[in-house]
Length: 317
Image (cartoon, rainbow, N blue to C red; front, side):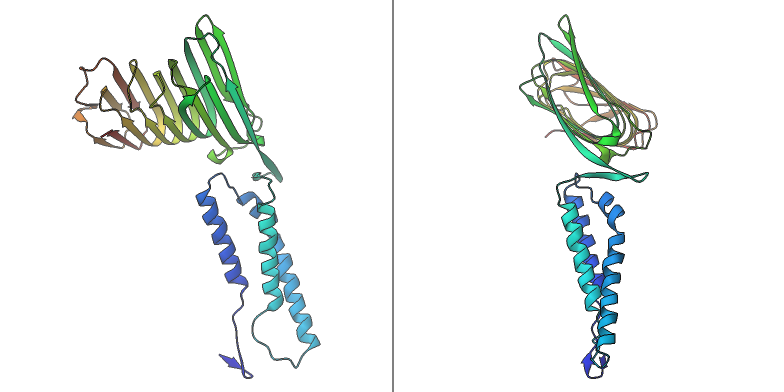
């Protein structure tokens, strides 16, 4: 459209903000540990300040030069939107990680690392208690345990306690519940590396979140997982030195379990199970077995029960 011989141009404020928000969301999807929402929630009024100041500048310019042709675009508001994006990037990249907004307080993200030696233990019982969060568990440690914790300061500090009685080690990882607010899985990220060559009994009690349990190289003899809600991925493939008894209970949305081909496997699924996808297993009622069940020196006995929405049982090729 033409006005006084000058093309009318659309404002660039909205496109600039769309690009900025889209880039932030894309980056947060790519890096789940990046949480921009507390910053956006706290500092979004700045956009009103910057764009408002820009519009005041535009109005002043029009009063100063009433005979100047109007282009239909707001230079001051556009500059204000750009200034807001620059300040927002500076806040997000300042090196400070913030917790989500809670009751007018912004809580900082914390990081801790712990290393535990086995001492004279020949077997270890490990208990992991997490209200909500993500657990990534695998082997490969030269110690009994190498751990990293990323957590919100209001969610409580993770505690690692270890003692040995005779030749049995007792490892307990828990988190102090320092506030009464509801926590989400974005509050806590636990990364745990266990030794491969010591028999382990592992009990995991978590309220909600995601469990990624890569037990392929770990000598686990017993696994108990109680989970309120979320998703769990369990890798039981590889060679086994001894029998493994595993129980998964609770309201897990989806349980994806990888099973070995060279070890006998028996899976019993009962309770409020939704759907079961079994690949490479024989099906008889609530029981699923592979070709080596009852024939191999060691056996995996897996029981899944409770309100699990979907179970995927996949035998390795």
